[in-house]
Structure formats: structure tokens, C-alpha cells
Picture 1 (cartoon, helix red, strand yellow):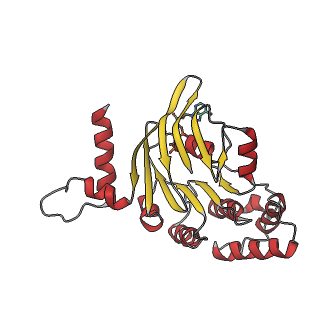
Picture 2 (cartoon, protein in one colour):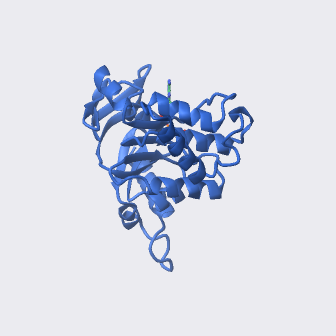
Picture 3 (cartoon, helix red, strand yellow):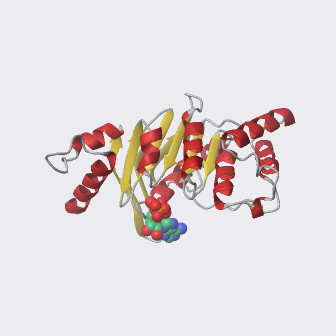
Length: 250
Ligand SMILES: Nc1ncnc2c1ncn2[C@@H]1O[C@H](COP(=O)(O)OP(=O)(O)OP(=O)(O)O)[C@@H](O)[C@H]1O
């Protein structure tokens, strides 16, 4: 994934401002305060929005072109921030349907992958119930499962752990951590626990600018120690110190 000079405006309001980044396979955690532009960035990386200023290349496809955005879809799993799942379908039927849309012709392979995701995301009890009757957490996990059907090479998840209870969050993180090494996973989150558990690399977006990228340890290393008695600063302290610096620079 290569992002160069990427900016985005909504009705002349600039929400991404010259973002540069490059990353490869593995899990990247995208952090940032509310309104920082994370969802906008993920929509651009998933080819849902067209980059109008700057360049995005994903899995070798140039996402400035319609052909590039289309070609990416074959290899993409995407969980948007807001998802509406068909209320009358069950998670199992929905996953089967998504598998079909993603070009998996073999019904046994679709059933096998759906069953595996259902089990690993703790959806066994809900798998055959109407999605309209499920809890928000079960719907969110079904949303994450659909993104992983077909074993895509690029997975873009917009706050997948939002609304999940601690056990469900751990399940989802464990699943993401176990994906194929060749898979590039980009996860936005407000939870520092998510990135601690998941991400060897993090990126922090603030007011449309990429203000940090690297291993979480580097964010911590840059932070001042909160007081003389404490040892190494926590990731929370590193993040808070970065946000203070960003505000002071403005
Ligand atoms: N479709 C849109 N039209 C106009 N403005 C938008 C649109 N989508 C987002 N915005 C604005 O762009 C800015 C960035 O929003 P975005 O959702 O990308 O941020 P975010 O970091 O994902 O925020 P959050 O953490 O709250 O989800 C916000 O000020 C938001 O109000």
C-alpha cells in the first residue's frame, strides 16, 4: 500500500491534508481522535472514494482509476464504519452470499469458510438466526466475518471492535492476528488495547495529517515520563503526549 500526497475535501472542507504512508503485509492499527479523517482515509484505501488529489496504490492497483478500484475489489475485504446487514438473513446465509459475490463458486468451500469464521468469532449460537434479531455485537462480528470471506489479500476494517464486549474483542483480535502473513490488514480503532494486542505498526492521524507512523514502542519512547517515580511511559501516555504536541504546533 502506497499513499502519496493524499488530500480529500468534502464541499471545500479539507479533511485529509497531504497524507504520505507506505506499508506492507501485517496488521496496521490506525488511531486518531474523532473527526481526524480515519474513516475517509479507509474509504479511499478501500476504493470506495476516488482519490482526487494525491495517489493511492493498493496491491499494485492505482486507485485513481476506475479499473484499479474495480480490480482491487476482487482481493479486498472491507468493513465500513456503518453497516446495514439484511435483517431477514442469517449470518450463515449472508456469509455464503458474500462468498458467492466474491467469486467463490464451490458451495462446500463457502460453507467451510463461513463455518470457520462463525466458530472463531463465537457466532455459533446466532449463526442461523435472523440478523435483525441479533445483538449489536453479534452483528458487528458478522460484519467482520463477511470482510474475511474469500481470504482477501487486503482487509480494511473501520472500528471493528466498536460495541464488542471484552471477550468478543479478544476473539476478533486473535482471529486478525492469525490471518495469513501475506495479508495486509488495516484496522482503525479508538482503543489503544486493540493496537497493543494487534499491531506491530501503528499510524496516527490528527486533523487530516499523519502525525506518527511506526512501531508503538517508538511512540512511547518519544513521550516524556509522567513523573520521576514512574518507569517507561505507557502507550496511552505516548499517545497523549503526541496529541499535546500536535495541538501546540497549531
Ligand atoms: N460525507 C461527508 N460529507 C461531509 N463531511 C464529512 C463527510 N464524511 C465525513 N465528514 C467530515 O470529515 C471529517 C473527518 O471525518 P471522518 O469520519 O473521516 O473522521 P474519523 O477520524 O473517522 O472520525 P470518528 O473517529 O469520529 O469516526 C469530520 O469532520 C466529518 O464531519
